[in-house]
Amino acid sequence: MQQTITQKILSRAANRKFVDAGESVWLNVDILLTHDVCGPPTFDIFKQEFGPDAKVWDPQKVVVLPDHYIFTANEHAHRNIDLLRQFAAEQHLPHYYDVGSDRYKGVCHVALAEEGFNIPGTVLFGTDSHTCTSGAFGMFGTGIGNTDAAFILGTGKLWEKVPESIKFTFDGVMPEYLTAKDLILQILGDITTDGATYKAMEFDGEAIFSLPMEERMTLTNMAIEAGGMNGIIAADSVAESYVRARSQKPYEIFRSDPDAKYHSRYHYNVRELEPVVAQPHSPDNRATVRSVQGTKITKSYIGSCTGGKLTDFVMAAKILKGKKVSVTTNIVPATVLVARALETERFEGVTLKQIFEDAGCSIALPSCAACLGGPSDTVGRSVDNDLVVSTTNRNFPGRMGSKHAGVYLASPLTAAASAVTGKLTDPRDFL
Image (spheres, rainbow, N blue to C red):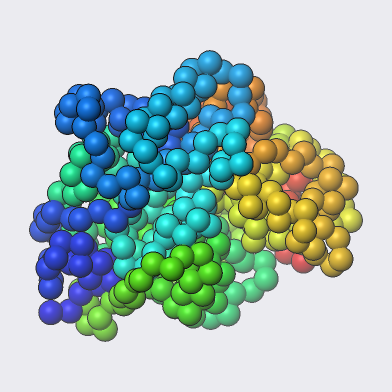
């Protein structure tokens, strides 16, 4: 029987030779991820259902990465961290990365990759919709609710329906002005925010496999914005070298069979695409940057799991070197490792940090920051009447703070070019 890569990974997790799209199976979970927003309620439900003295199924397979509401004076945010600490201590969880300690990592989806938890062929569930980011490593990753996560904590298993797959093939050589963000926003404009509901979004083609891992993570991260259950890219030598540098765990690489059955297929030639944005207030409200060029903005935000990786900042630095920003511009590294790399990574002989500081940007501490709005003292949070160009992944009303602000989702290149001019600007004007 011919299977897609997602079917093959779920077959392995179900101890089966074959699973059919649409059937429900018990999956053995390799990793459960949670963070400071959803960890406390998940732990509460676990204790209610399994008993106050219950132990998690496997402490080695539980990863707790506080990242959302971190650098704030908000007492409720602090309380959530206290609850994480308490549970991690009770359960002897080795993979709890505490805030304020030298173990703190930053945004969970990027930290998972950096810390070697993303292993080809495995199954990851997380209490965060953007857990699909990990699919860039040829694995199955998807977001779940707190009740499902509590069940996994107790049993290590979850009952799931096998998704149909949609295949997106990108042919051609990526031009320098195009990024993974442009590719996924192009898809969203074509299929809308419910176009892949409960489907696996599989990415393929020459352009995809020419991307570095961090760019692939941007693609799979935003599968959920189309309603996708997971985004996935088969692991190749680029993925393998990334994984081997960070983990000694054995793994199995799966690829879709040539005659695997797909719900639908989409083909693109990247040479025919151009930089795009998602206009307020939906990730599928696509427009070419050229068509909205000149729209005045009040802020530029370069950060988050989608836009705060090292490759994102290298792209931004290409535009910002030797320039000055004309609006408030926040640089928010996704993780501590990325923040450190800003001090050592150079573009044309100058460190990225120096380029950003010289341009007049403010560099924040690594976390999710304003991507999910956050308490009132959160860095980069939007206020009434703001019009923000942002490398984040959602632009619903209130997503980055004020419900009376607008957010344009864009690539790091477009966000940087717009920061310089103070209005939406096609990065080709600078490259």
